[in-house]
Length: 166
Image (cartoon, rainbow, N blue to C red; front, side):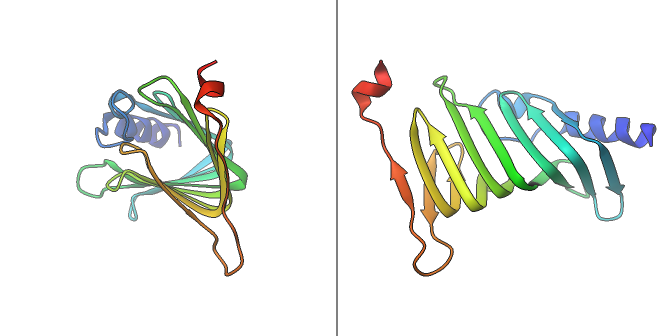
């Protein structure tokens, strides 16, 4: 088990197509958990129990994280996080902290898309967006939030620029 854990870390560290912001994509990926389950045939690794994933300024914390790798080159294609509250945080190039949480997190590397489902929340500089589902394109900083069911609403709090600058 120790050898497979080390080989996984080596594959994760060698992956160049990981996360989206400028310096984060060049950093190795570190994952700590209570246990891991490696399925070499499906190129899937499941981490369970107080999972902490870090790459550069990116942090994902969840009860369970699943990493899907490309069968040909070993690069990470997608990361899924699940928990009572799964969290995502990242520093942006301008030094601001982006923070998100939901019961389900899906990060697609190819699309550079973070999707948060079920009690989703995304905040930056005291501005907060809440909804059933939030889709965020990290590099282009574009966001779509909506309610999952009819009657669900999206709630937004935008802080005045003067307050943010102080």
